Amino acid sequence: MIRSEVTAPESHRKVFREEIRNAIREAIFSGELNPGDRIIETYWAKELGVSQGPVREAIRDLEALGLVETVPFKGSRVRSLSEKDVRDNYSVRICLESKSIRNAIALLTDEQMEQLTDCLRDILEEMDGCAKRGDLRAFTECDTAFHRTIINATGNLVLLKLWEQCNMRNWLTVPALTNAESLKQLQSGHQHIYQAICAKDMKEATSTLEDHLTNLMDGFIRDIQP
Image 1 (cartoon, rainbow, N blue to C red):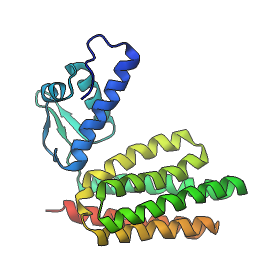
Image 2 (spheres, helix red, strand yellow):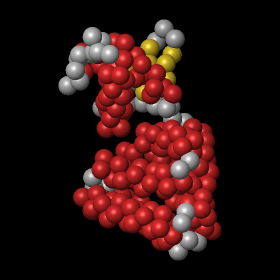
Image 3 (cartoon, rainbow, N blue to C red):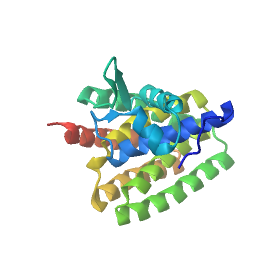
């Protein structure tokens, strides 16, 4: 339960806003809220023990991330993604992540590269366990950590911000990945990217990344088609 924010200072208000945003986002990703469902401010304010102000702010944040759309006089709803939305999103994500891999391979020192690959290896081990258990929620967290780790290594904060927005939208369609076999296949794609980065093979790493994300995109598009 989130604490009441009636008399909270501005710094606490920001925390409430982030917590509320995460709670609504989790409801979307878990399927509690489906595309087209209304996001009712009064419900979330009561559910989380806050006033409607920070709920409204959190909804605006989710709208900026592309998860929510607000229609005048009709309120806010979980956004439904079209095939074009998915293709546009993935085309940008591929560009951003290819850039991060090229920069990492070209600019990191040997020590920095070793730190990066050690971290990626640890994430892959955890991801493998999630895949074997068929744990979708934990797997998506590992997936996000894997790609974010590469971008963080470049130190490019603008690239990271743009990627965060793209990655957030991807997981609107995660119900397509509901069994251990599909997760194991996805983990294998990450493994190939990791191996190419370890070898500092820029061409292979970016090509593997593009194939990996394109295959994921195609699977999501099949899932949202009627």
